[in-house]
Length: 407
Image (cartoon, rainbow, N blue to C red; front, top):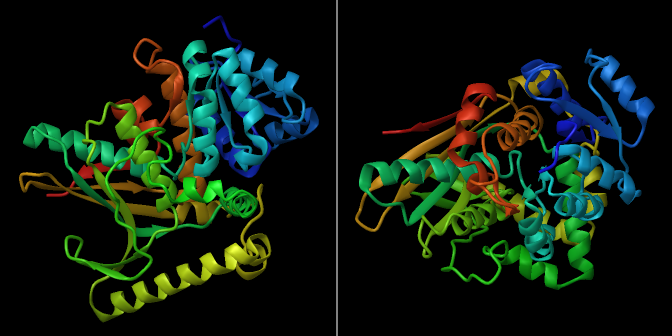
């Protein structure tokens, strides 16, 4: 790669999550140190105002870039080693930047939870990214880093203990306190609206291996009902992020050469507790999930905004809500020989904002500081396959996540 002015450019720095990323970079890495970063967006005056409001040094450069002006995206991509983008929904605004990075050989990280768009982009840009050396990494926030790396961590430990990986893993959200992000809501509605116009998108959304072109794996568990999980000792309900997380886990497995096996089975659900109360909560959650799916298919935007009053893109919870949020995900695995292993991934901030802003930043920093192109060549990657153990270490050291085996 030719010499670049910036190590990381935060595109969308005036948005809610983009501001959190800039704040984290400022407090964690400072200005003028080993990591050179810049703030990017459409308006120089807004960028300057945000920089001043957040107490960030005027030495942090401002980069003007607009999704509607491809030449500005090209210039931004050519100036950076990594472009970190929080500008979504990606299916509406993401491709011009992705194309610019693939062309320029620039690494790219995003918060995309839109599997149909991701599947289309993999087919379209994989070869170009391989040729240029660009490492394009989707889903670097709560979807899907804790889940992708949780499985990676569990499998690493299983290999060390048993000499083999686990053929069956369950991801179970044990506890979580936080809110939907406005970007997640916007991405969900954009996906459903696109699916209503293009029926092929539905096939991508329902295929657990849609991010692994040409591969057809074993049938995966799927249930929209309340179920008791004996291994977790809890009633469980559908988990709204499972459709994206499971796809990324399977893509990581494929990109790494199927270390989990080509017959690997993985699913995700939410734990609601043991006993009658847990069953009641699971049934209520499953019923609500089914109602939501029906209503979303009818009128997604109106229903989401009016019924749940979810934040719009650029909005989010206050600092206290972000600081008091958390999540705790349990992973339960077993292999073909009867060995079993449990692990947990916990985060100390709310998943959608406080923790997500740190995770995506550490993904970008790992690409700059830890993983060279001889180790990880160009292409469309997942965080697990591209960064793996390096990212786990960074997240534990800096971002408030913990990975642990539960004996």
